[in-house]
Image (tube, rainbow, N blue to C red):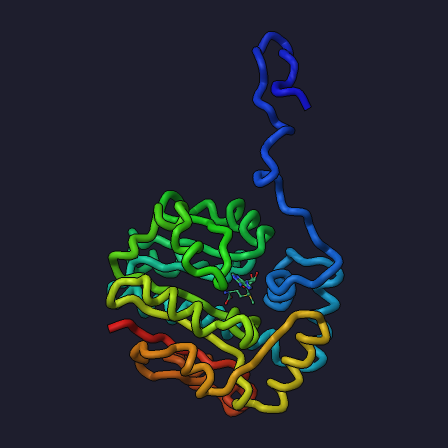
Length: 286
Ligand SMILES: C[S@@+](CC[C@H](N)C(=O)[O-])C[C@H]1O[C@@H](n2cnc3c(N)ncnc32)[C@H](O)[C@@H]1O
């Protein structure tokens, strides 16, 4: 492709639309394998998914008919936790493993309490980020969309786009919901979380949800097995194992509890309590 498109209608040389450097090209759309973000979008009732994602989601639903509720409860946990921290004075959030945009988003939640709150959205799936950039335009200059990987925390924290909205010298909430159970032990999730939190100022927080291996044991086992069958590696962890991910951070009330039971806004029915398959926790760096 020539450097410039021909001079049309006397407008002068047009910008080189088609010869952008390789790293600017949109990511190839892989529709043959299920992507976690698109499977999750389907489970939440969204519209950004393909046949393979729907097939994987249906497989998961056969293993755990409550999975849609669990996904909604995860979004609800994120909403309660971000709002709680914003009310406590935290005004910076890094939402790692953002997923396809699902309302209300972290900046909408935080800004309802702290109008100047700043949010960096991070995902390692370029498709997620291209959707987020298009759909979350209400965020304005206080939001950033960063292609990054939790398994490379130093590189993630060096990203200029993230640093443009997040000041690591001030308290920041690292929001990591629905992600760490996709990192098996050999990917060293505890080490990456520690690196992330070590880089943050005192008063910073970790917001975490994690698939549990010791709550509704049969449901949890069937769910993890179905994820693996759908070629999505998944490792649910016990309460003690999730506490290891939290490390030395101080647990905020009510501690590490089944996700829906973290500062709930209404009484939980027995059924809801008995089908919990994930923990939720907010923990603070002293
Ligand atoms: C189930 S979605 C969770 C979405 C959202 N955090 C929530 O709780 O509603 C998991 C997201 O994590 C992303 N993800 C998976 N592994 C990741 C990694 N190593 N680093 C960053 N993002 C990752 C996926 O692309 C997906 O968008």
